[in-house]
Length: 630
Ligand code: DMJ
Image 1 (cartoon, rainbow, N blue to C red):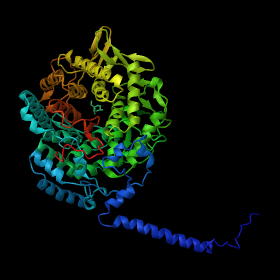
Image 2 (cartoon, helix red, strand yellow; image 1 turned 90 degrees about the horizontal axis):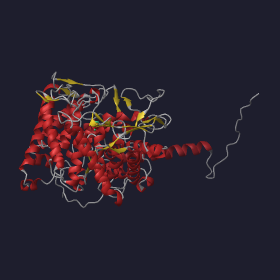
Image 3 (cartoon, rainbow, N blue to C red; image 1 turned 60 degrees about the horizontal axis):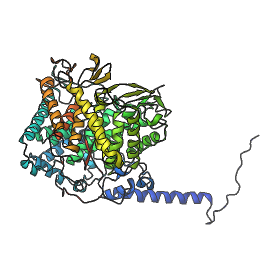
Image 4 (cartoon, protein in one colour; image 1 turned 45 degrees about the vertical axis):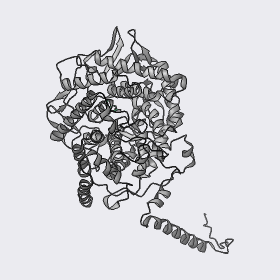
């Protein structure tokens, strides 16, 4: 029989307290601590204290979290703080009080945001630190916007004063033309599809698609920074008002983690950094929080699809795999989400992805495109710098640059990967065209996708920080790849490039079947022209860029917006009836920058996410040359 042991004697503690007394004392003590700690949060103007407790920072000023990456000495010294206080509904969320306060705020913004661009700039400067506004559904964390702006090396919109000295009034006229295209694309969207994700210019209606889990307005959020940059003041205000009043996050569909991140989060973050408007910061963070369930996998490698409704373990699907370009293109945005929220969870998620990728064995130093989020093993040995792989490589070099060159791990990973790509994937065709092939378990597909054409720009961007003996080589490689991509345009009837082009059977830089001959307003080729222009100032890049403008006007412009075309080899356009959001976010922005001064969104101050949304570099010193100007 089991006898319960009844203690007949409770020994006294060294202080002479018996166990029940000790328990009561501890209870009292812990209550006291909780009370003191809680009081800190209730004090007025306690944001500094909150910051102290919620997000350990470096002592230097700057975008500290952006430097806070695995491998960086600062990262090792810090502990993970608790998550911040749960956020209340954001402006524009569905409860009535929030909508009313949004209306009030809108009126205030109209008053404080006068019409001229310079005034727009002044208003943004005036907004100062993004103070806590819990009554407006703000996220309780402060970010010193003025201090951030004063650390930029260049005025955001460039040194306009020098413009009149430009000998080429032609360049100005070209820039104006591109601005007109943006205005036309925006106005067509506003007229026929306002609030929908995309415009269908032939049927003159809107389209929601299935990538965004019920979120709307993808074109609006993707356009914000381009409108701002081009000083389309009225259009920018329309877009901002829509975000304030109509961008609701209470959706319940299934969304692509990658697409929501690069378009919505990226677009909102950029809009915040350009304007200092709190609504963009709050919406970005709250949407970021909705993406977190995607990381609930055994490895922490997120699934590609996030279910906004359930917080279930979406990974539990046999044989599922995550895509390198998708889970590898979160880093830039997630570090900024932590920076602007004080919530370390975002940075932790992407640090973990880095850790997994660092550890895993890479065949020949290459990164295959599919990884199991369950086992952490590669699923197939398919390697590509185009679709499925592309922006992973881009985010490595940009993480290095965005960290103000402190994220050495990202830099090393980038150059190691680039070496492997050069060794195994880069080829020169019999006709002398350099291209990046695709690799399937050791066998090469001698084809390049339009998506892979961003790599000319990426390699140019990274050339300056390569080993001394490699720099000139990388500059040349970048120029050669960009030239090949231009050839894929030049060899078509429309002077626009196909979705994929091949180098075999005597054919070079052309698509071999109709299913690869379409052009959907993609940006990658003009993106590379922009980087190569900034690096070399070789007029050929502006010439090539202008060829694209003319071709877009001739073959893609319709009565009600721009449309992709189904066959670049036919001079009678067959439109696909879609004005892609990235046309406004990327293609037109890169074209505009190509015809602008180098200090407009200077590469010293900004990196572009893979949807061309500018995110600031972590400058931690105060040697600003912008002197607080826009
Ligand atoms: C964009 O959404 C992004 O550039 C992404 O990285 C790749 N595809 C499109 C544009 O082609």
